[in-house]
Length: 401
Image: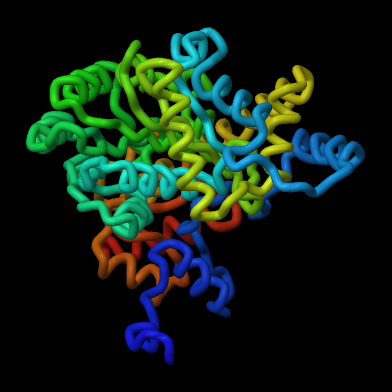
């Protein structure tokens, strides 16, 4: 027997991580990488948060075993995640109609959700925003879902195309999965307004869709509770939906792969039943979650002093991202580069879409050693005092040249 014939032809590199690999292999001086979605400080380093270091010290000092964790993770972690997402006084929490599972990152949460729905007979259609994170279609396609795009931000524009979005979703069938970005939309940085969220929530109810909210950047937009404003439209009493959480960004726990999947059902019994099936899905996939990152999150959220320290650190990261947006707009406008750059300053989260052509993106990489994704998606958090001017100069060269 031999490996499949198709495996003998190399697969194309990942559209995001593949660029990081190419950047590392590039030996040109002054090269700039704004492709990977990783927070860095002004020295270009992704720091370990002081609150995380303090939590790790406590964990290591008290650790007595490396035994497996439960299939869906420790109860303390699951509770901490639920309360962080919804707040302790939310109807979903007080009614007990949700169940949370610890997953390997937000990506793991999305894949568990896809497999759980596929195995339990859900319709195999998922609606995703156009544009969206490139891994969204890959995850759900691998689980056997049909991918249907809905307009989100039209090329060259910097606002949600809400009428076109709702018109497209008018074709969705009852039970179809609707993938929504809870905040800090990737790749555009453009989020629905409260009024637009209400219209989305109304359509979900009329069309009987099942929302899956990808909530990977809580706290990176306007604040922990502010970034959860989507809940007023989606998390209504009795409404069922799924939620994928990630703590890569807001705790800077990238390599610990800490995430969660929360299933919200009509009542406690339905949530418990759904959770039993989620656990079957997890058992057949990776069996048990890793523990260290979840212990860090649990320790910080469970200690008032550490939590307060973490929230200050999170606000610092958020503030730096907002400042970088203003610096970027100023740099692009100072060079009189054609385009409407001002709205970037008011967008949210780590990413901005520059609306560059494929040829311009290629020229950035080949002629200027500047790495960006797709149509010019950049990681605003990756801008530093050292790379801002070279980046803006390169953009000016490819747009005007």
